[in-house]
Length: 189
Image (cartoon, rainbow, N blue to C red; front, side, top):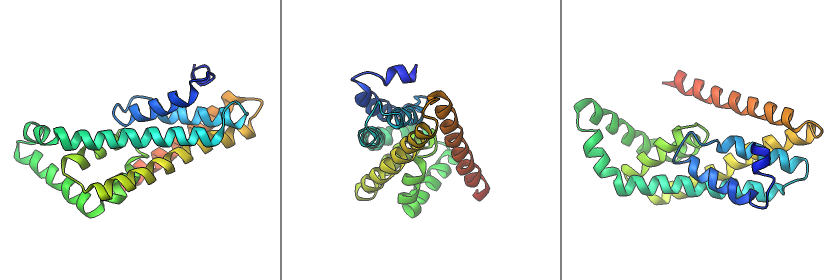
């Protein structure tokens, strides 16, 4: 179904839109779609640079939207969701982490499903400086798009005659990298 979705003249806007939406609604399969776009670029159906650009622009738009929503609606959410002592401690911890490691967290969160949504919204809510957020969100979006699309692209090139196998291998690698990042994060904690 994803291959059919990306085998239309609307392929690039679909990739951009799904990548933007995934930053706000984590169940949207943007990484899978970016990998599929890479597989299709590997077999010559799409242009590699345009797939990467579409995924990166979409990711940046989505992350920026989450940040701006956090700035706009964060104070109301803070008052409602963080009224208890324990919740305030958690929020204070998040504010300290973003103050100390904001750039790093923005970059790493892009690779953690669901993490990017929470991090970008919280960064806006706690008023992380835009001069820190937007450049790091752009770097993170380009790194994520390059990683996901090239994973599919090289898989598509190696498995040119079997694009579904390429997609399965690329998704397995992507899930493996995500699991390693999540495991490392948990072990650090």
